[in-house]
Image (cartoon, rainbow, N blue to C red; front, side):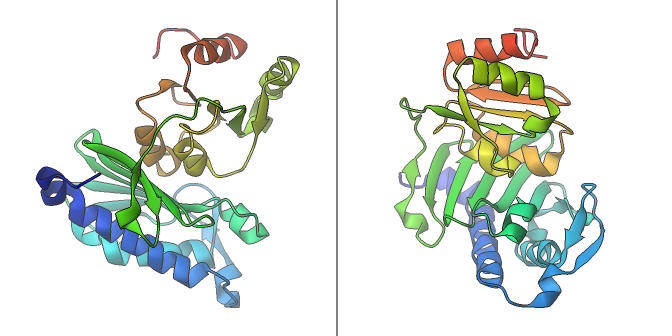
Length: 254
């Protein structure tokens, strides 16, 4: 999909800087043996203890993105200043990375006023990015951005993704009783970035912008229900309405 002049003028530089940040983070963390990266630090702005690799990923992202506005990071909170906000999770799925489970990445959103204008989620394990702006929704290999292709729905999806399923064991049991398969991969932004390829994505818990800002923007064209403790996304209307019924949620979006 060729880039439009408007896209290049308004958001192209930010997207390229975001991709460059992801590439540098990947290079720093891939096969990391530096023990300082695995030292646990204080509780970050998002409420979790930060590891050295979280802070290193944040440092790299700030270096690339700070010129575009104020960065709101899961680790250090507000960094710098500017009219735009960059909502950042430097390493979504930190526990997965620590455990060697290949589902972790970077989440970046550019917010102007109250509107998200760019959402980029990079899966560092598969080296694949998911990008949405006002005029495009594409995916591309991290190291070959010119090979971008449109994100399209997968009509053959059989499984859903259920983040924080432990918070709703009753709902998990109801899904199992219906024969609806799901996985709980443990990286919220990445799960929602894959929403067009799976049957549904569920999240129950504290709704933190670091996890959700870019992720929900990426799947805004799907059926969705979002409040301060729930996010449900589904490709098909019937699936979506069944999920609302299972979890006893109103059919009118809040």
